[in-house]
Image 1 (cartoon, rainbow, N blue to C red):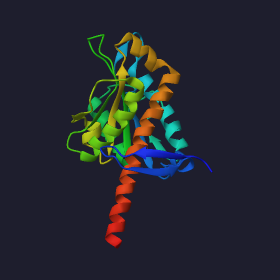
Image 2 (image 1 turned 180 degrees about the vertical axis):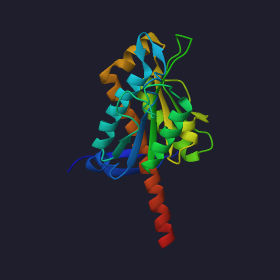
Image 3 (image 1 turned 120 degrees about the vertical axis):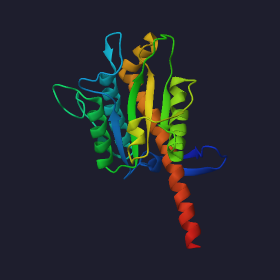
Image 4 (image 1 turned 45 degrees about the vertical axis):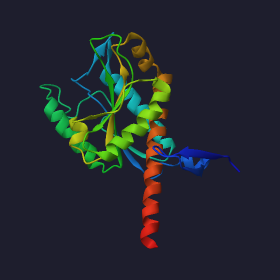
Length: 229
């Protein structure tokens, strides 16, 4: 019989046990939409000759593969180098965001992961950071779990942060925006371009998502049991 994983519930001291097989498929039937930020005419940050939108897409595709290993049904806002308008002229950020939000909600997913890279005029700035819509308690809890898992790899000192980013504010889907690191930091830029590092990032984000999802499912089961008593 396969060994048992102990999963700690965030903010508490209680534990519950699940088998390895159950953990590996803990996102079965869960629907996740991954938004690779920017694209097309909108390259996002450009540092040392590397474009943010390209790195966002590389990570998004790896994230899709990683989540599918755990049984999730995964959708992408884009799978190539284009923005949501798919125009070859007159790029409009407003139109792009309107269509991006509309596409995200069309999938009716359980979770949204928006992937981005950071940049700063301060070349020494570094570290991952997770954002959530400032009015969403669930978003804050999801951001916390993903952030705690991600920091095991990135060692970032940056706290989670509430925001009003349209991709989180205007969507009906519970989600977070993940700044994986700073392209403007030469050393971190090198890491973010590494396929091996990108895979590790995706694994840590998945671990955080699973932690949140399992806790929410446990709470729902307890509420259902209480109602049936």
